[in-house]
Length: 255
Ligand code: ADP
Ligand code: MG
Image: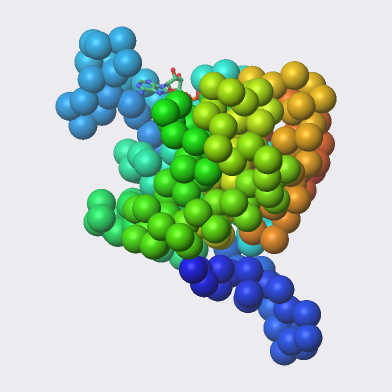
């Protein structure tokens, strides 16, 4: 699993030749527009009206950046994170992940790129209830064809890293909310992705637990690229940059 070419390219200690090279772009959205229910599909309400979720959205995330995505409910944050993860192909525009446009590549290639380069952390953890913490963390490695002993070893190392070394055999239902989110973070890291997307990762947690989870995310996001959607001031305060959305449009990108 040596798919962190990006990080190696940016971690330039001892390599003076790359000192003045700009960080590579991890994610780039270029004039992205998305309508749910277009293309003959049906919208959430079951009728055939379309909902314009994103309008001409452009911004980018460099390797090493922690970028906050802020905006009221319904402003398009999750839609952006789905597009960046290759879980959704927007109606128009380009979404580049490590210089490959996810909107023009095949479904198979898009899935491959997601599994290899993106770690996803959801608000509601999305753990499989019947699997132990270790098995949940190891799951992405099954898809990657990694042998069982290596999967277990890697999952245990990550669970230790997130402070759950003594919970590896617990089921999600036997863990607190903060612990479940730590398991989800370990799972997002297990394939050693270049990009982490987190969708309101502290939204279900109390303030203190949320802050611990946030510290952990910042710690792991620092040498990757982290795009985190949040309403939460403390999350946005630690971002290097905040992109603000209103009604599917970027209304500010900075600070
Ligand atoms: P946020 O994450 O900021 O709350 P979303 O990206 O989830 O925003 O939603 C943006 C807009 O798209 C909202 O108007 C929402 O109702 C709509 N939307 C989201 N998902 C779907 C869907 N699967 N089908 C139809 N409309 C959707
Ligand atoms: Mg959302």
